[in-house]
Image 1 (cartoon, rainbow, N blue to C red):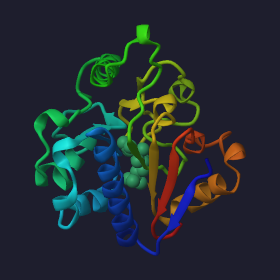
Image 2: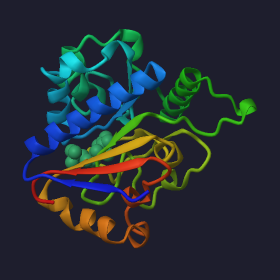
Image 3: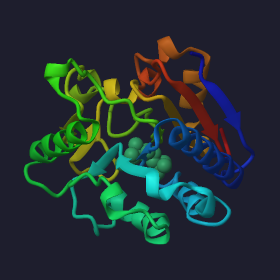
Image 4: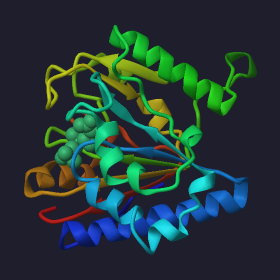
Length: 246
Ligand code: 6PG
């Protein structure tokens, strides 16, 4: 399925469009299956989108009681640490919405060592999705995964040259994060999990990302050689929301 590209003049326009897309997906999924499984992205770009979701009219329309929130990646720090993707979402979204506590599925990034945190999250996902190797379940199919992209073309915490990019069996792995900003170990879902999602929404903004984004849009196959974000694309619908500078 070819990706859809939605170009906006600024971050506000992108964030409003993205919030509406999330609301539309939530309504459709809850109507169809009674629940909406949404994977949050980290970094800074999604913050205005999360704030939109936490404010009227979106906050009043979202089916929070049937929505389950997950994370695509997390830094290996405590949940109140300034590096934490959970902390960012807590401030921008979670603290402002009536999400049932049992519907919030945080990556416990502070577990030591990081490999233990990754295993624990994979086990939590398997439990939630009722997946079992015996049943031949390969990967969970989230309703919507939000992704960002770094200026180097990484997405989630999948960095070019890292073993995690090529992982084809595990759902969740830990990475050293030496090339990341901040350079701390991380926990990340793997590409097979991302590419099993029904919908994937990239949120990208800023002139520094333009060259990589355009390269992916122009020739994704060629871009795969350099940018993990180019390797996102599976059976689901992929939508790129771009803000200023792209
Ligand atoms: C993380 C994110 C990461 C992020 C990109 C873009 O934990 O850092 O998940 O993949 O989405 O680095 O970050 P910005 O939105 O801050 O540019």
